[in-house]
Structure formats: structure tokens, C-alpha cells
Image (tube, rainbow, N blue to C red; front, side):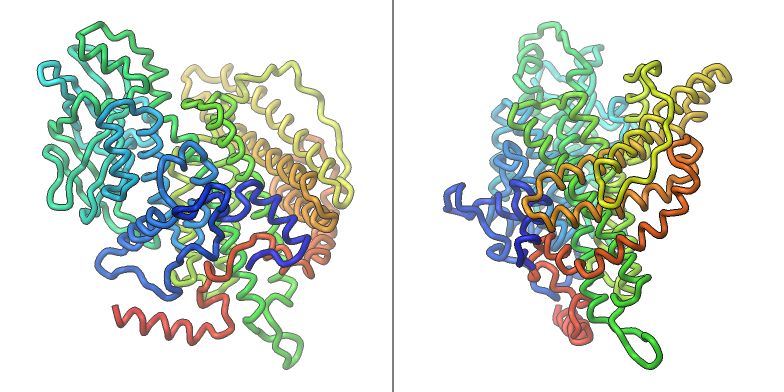
Length: 619
């Protein structure tokens, strides 16, 4: 439903900024750039259209082709990431596996080709992907090394006589694990990360473009084995092995072509291996932001479904009365908590998208350390928060939340994929926390000061408390690290002793980012009522976080026991203030009803289920 009031429109603008909805940055075919497509002008799948029985993943590929032919899935989505993020947000709502497909096809494959390719082969691959003659995959992760891409073992040995590279997988542990390249009904083009070797020299990890095969047969030397089904997420994941697969010299994606030129002329290669690796994985940073956008969009949709369901689903009330579920305090309080978290997650995701868009405008291929840190923490914060929201939304729909036709199981499956893709959340959070500790001078830490519970609606005070909690967590990491180094000689033992402290620091840092972005949205809102609602949502989010972290915050001396005793009362008051505003807060999402035509949102859900059954039988 599109925003229908000044307040809803103001909330909508704070959520989407210059994306202004799910599709307003995308051009209609044949239209000028200043005439963007509206969400209701984009064709959507039939409400009860089931996946193909033989190959469920085909649905996402059909939708990808529809997007390509209507709004464009091309290099403009790389040069202006807002287009990519809008595509991802829209896809996440209507077909979550499509969002996963877009991440590989558009961001990782097409994006790498555009930013790193400077050869005839790279340009031809780009044209094939844009024209729909092939779909893209990104072959980086290996079975044993996982996301530790700097240690990957796939070989790309240069054959100087034939001016070709020979790709090889040395053993089972080095097979490329999980890329979406099993479906053979459409040719696949992959960006493959491999270790460049010439003679006896190991030149580090580089990116190569490789055609995995045609519709009829795989490329010689390429073996693709489909992986088992993943319940709830029908994607064509596979294990890929190379056995003397040959690609031309122009397949090397080295940016300006200086490595290719040196290989062609037989010069000694003075390759900066860390820089080459950073270039090869540069799109992963944008990918983290894209996964955040996907998770936030799915969480907004799931909360909307849960609220619509609670409005029409009745249950026993007082005595013989029957009332909508949403009238029960335990139910609408949980919905409000989910709304507060999804607004916080959406604002954090939006800030990440803005940072990525600004970086693209500067034509930076490799993110700066500050940008990389922000992308990592955005993913950690947003995908984790959204997982809580999606789980709560599914539970609040009861048995209806279990059916794929109501999408929430698909949302949860893709969200779990987002939490592991582009670096597992726990791993990247620990790495980010270590960087924070090493980049911070312990001597600058201030002693803890007890803070009163912030006044109602005072986001400035909540943000200050969040910053103080982060600072104390950072100090605790310094103290713990010093003690661990005195107690242990092995590096692993030191890190194991500090891992809980480091994870808490990541959580405190993420929470501070969330409060900062809520405060920024509060300042940005151009409607007084919208500002009041954002402040109240921020307070609900902050109260929930403080409740979960109460023991550590109390230990740090940042709050007094009497303050914690007020948490339930303050939360109840916020719930009472927001209960009448739930429909308005959902309107702020601006999700067109046509995108959420699932049985659970309709009072006539029985007929919808019957219609779905009849449609399945027809297929």
C-alpha cells in the first residue's frame, strides 16, 4: 500500500531516500532517465503462481529475464548502485531466491567484469549477460577454505606457448562450493577466483572470466555437480571442479591489463599480491550492503504480512467475545517490537547503501578501510536484526507462517543465506572488532559514569548511552586482551579467551550505529508526527537492546539497578503510544498491495488456499 498521509509519506522518504520506493530509480524501456518506473507499472507474478515442479529454480530465472526485458539488468546498476539496491529490494519481497540470483549475476559477476575487465573477452561476456544470452555466477568459495579466499587453491597456470590459462582444482577440498550454476537450461558465465601461476611463481589470487558451458554441454574441463536441495530456498547451487579447463589470456580480469601485457611479452611480473586480491574481491563489499537491503526488505514485508493477518484473524477475547489477534496486548506488543527493529534495520541498511553509492561516484574499485568496515557492520547489524524480526513474524502468523505461499519461510531461508554469504556474520564481526581494538588507544578510554535512563523520546540521550556502552566494551576488550596475552603463548588461545568480549564489542558497535541512524532519520523527517513516531520506535528498540544486555551494562556501572527496574514500565508506555499508529507505520513501508497478495493477508484466505491448490494441479 502506498503512503496515504503526510506522516506516512515522510516516514517513507526517511526509509528510502533518493531510491524513493522499490523501483523509482529504474527506467522504463524507451523512457528518459528522469521518468522512472513506478512499482505498480512493473509486471508481477500471478498471486498463486507456484514454482515449477521439476525445477523450482527456473521461476527465479524467468523473473530475471522479465526484469532484463522491462527495466534493465545491466552495467548501469553497477555505475549507479541505487538501481541495483532497488532491484534487490523489489525482488526480495516477491521472490527471495531471485534476490540471491541477482546478487551473483549482477553484483558479483557483471560488476566484477565491468570494474576489472579491459579485454575483448570481458566486454563480450558483459554484452552476453546484459542481452540475456547467459546468466552470471561468482566462483570464489572453496569447500575446505570457505570464505578464507586469500588461501584458496584453485590454479590458473599460464601457458605461454598458447597464451592461455589452464584452470585446475588440485583436490576435493578446493572445489568451488555453492555457486548457482547447476541449471543447464541457460548458458552460464562465471567470474572465477584462482591463484595465478607462471613458471614457478605464485602471483596470488586473481579473477578470471570463464564460460561454464552452453545449453547442450559444459565447457571442456568444467565439471558441475548439483548440490542437494535446500528446503525453503530453491536455488541451483552446485560444486564446480576444473580439470585442465582452458581460458584465453583476455580472461584475466586485472583492471588496466598490465598483468596480461607482462605475461604476453614475457616480462617479470612485479605484482602487488594484496592489491590484486583486494581488486578481485572488491564487489564483495557492495554485496554485503546488497544482502542487508534484501534482509531489510524481506523483514518489512514479513511484518506487513503479520500485521495484516493479526487484523483479520480472530480469537477468543473476554468471555464469549471474539476479537482480532491484534487487540491482544501480547500480540500487538510483539508486532511493535518487530516494527521498531525493522525500522532500525532499514535505516542502517539505507546508510550503507548511501555510503556505497558515494563510493561508486568516486569510481573507487577497492573500498577504503572505513568503507569496508561500514559494509561489514551494516551486514552484521541488519541481517541479524532482520532474522529476529522474521522469526517473530512467522510465529505471530501461527500455522500460516509455515506455508511457503505466505513467503515468510522463504524470507527466513534467504535471510539465513545472507547471514553466511560474503563472510559468515560471526567471523566478520570478530574481525571487525579486532580491527577496532588494534586501531584504538586504550589510554583515551574514560572512566564509566552512571547514566540515568534517557527521558521518553530523547534519541540524543539514547545515542549517548549507546556510545558509552560501546566505549566500555572496547575498554573491556583491551583489558581482556592484555590478560590473555599474559596467560597464553599461542595466538589461538589468546583469541579464544577474548572472543566473547570481541563479539559483545561488535554488538555494542552495531547498536550504536542503529541509534545513530535512527537519530539521523529523526532529524531528516519533515513531519512532526513522523519525528515523534521515529523517536518512540527508537526508544522501543533501545529498551529491548538494554534489556538483553542488562547484566553487562550494570556491571560496567553505566546504569543503576533502579534504572533497569523501569524498563518494563517504559516499554509498556511506548507500546501504548504506538498501538494506534501500527497501520500508519506499515503505510510508511510503501509496499504496493499487489506485491503482497498472499493468503495470510486476506480475510478470505481459505479461498486463496483453494485457488493455490487448483493452480498447482493445473501445473
